[in-house]
Amino acid sequence: MASEKITAMIEEVKALSVLELNELVKALEDATEKNWGDLLKDWEKENDCKVNLTVIPWDKYEETYTTA
Image (cartoon, rainbow, N blue to C red; front, side, top):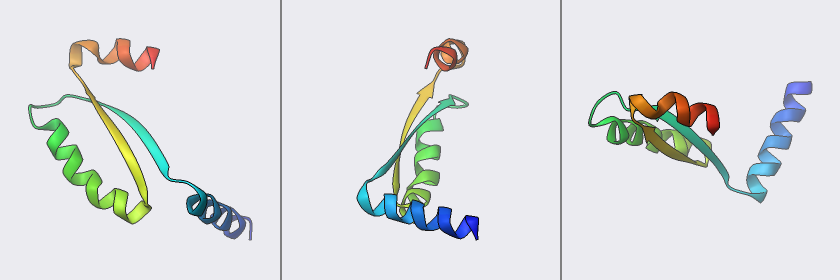
């Protein structure tokens, strides 16, 4: 019962605005941004949202993550 109410509330909010997520990821290879972008494209459509992906070099990840 409670989960149905929460789901209904989420659907209401989705109708009012665009959900936007910001995600930090470590650069694992040169194609990290492309690979994540390919994966997120369908996920964004399925979940009606926008994901802003920021790829962080390994040597800057801890500093960026802890200050974000």
